[in-house]
Image (cartoon, rainbow, N blue to C red; front, side, top):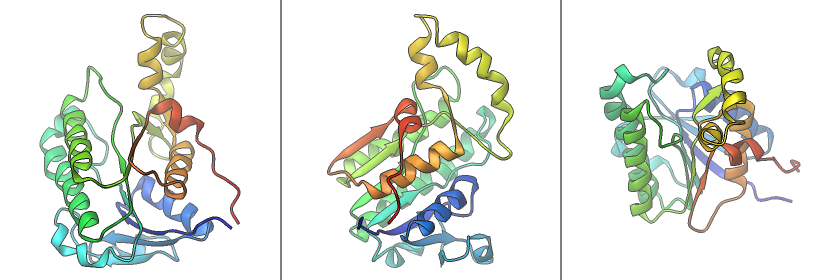
Length: 222
């Protein structure tokens, strides 16, 4: 029987978080998620809410234990270049708070959703996510860092129009590597990669780029 994990999630009411929580619960893991007061009902059934402020570690750090795994999913909705200040106010602040809270709780494995880089656009977003990656490495926590570019799913489908462009770029030697690194992943692929990360903790720091995210497979649930 595979190990069942006790997972603490920030960003659990979001697009990616709800999908991940459902999969983890279906596979027998215990899941708690950080929420703002009044948002408890937005979590999938079976997930235990923890009320706190994702931007302030002190508001929830004492409630992370006994989690062995911490998944950081908080971020600015619909990122765009005009949201540079929000990236620092929300994405950076919540990422650093999550790392702090996980360290205080002696979490064994930290999972962080970053972004593919380098890229010629979304520089402010990439800078903030890179700062969080660097802080995570300095923390000494064992960690898995996932670097998607854009996650396709409900309400996030317009990039399907770019698929022909990606197909052509992947065939050209000068753009093939960039097309792979900045490729699109589906919500199903992303959720599978996150579940795989929960169930296969690492002893140091592991980075999963787009091709690795696409190739992740879940083992059969017990």
